[in-house]
Image (cartoon, rainbow, N blue to C red; front, side, top):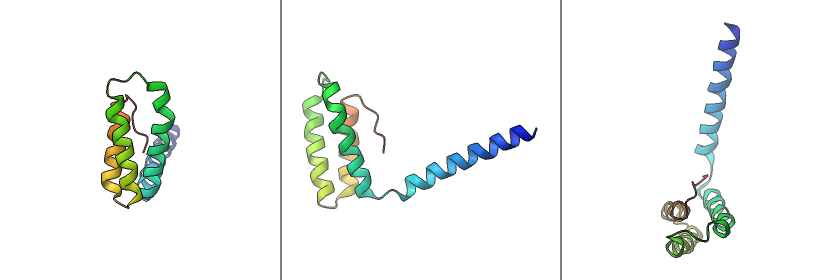
Length: 90
């Protein structure tokens, strides 16, 4: 029984710490992480059907992030990743 309580408490702590980290991630950091993820993944997904669209979204998203339009930039970067078949990490 004590093992179950300890396991439950550990899982709850892990979940809360992950949620807290995500909530505290700055939008500029999220943009940087998504840009890096795309740039690393694009070479291994060069046959993706929507590759050209994804590259355009990455460029546009990067520009939006540079001009502090983080919400729109993050949306475009996530879509760029999805278009090449990659799940966004941020």
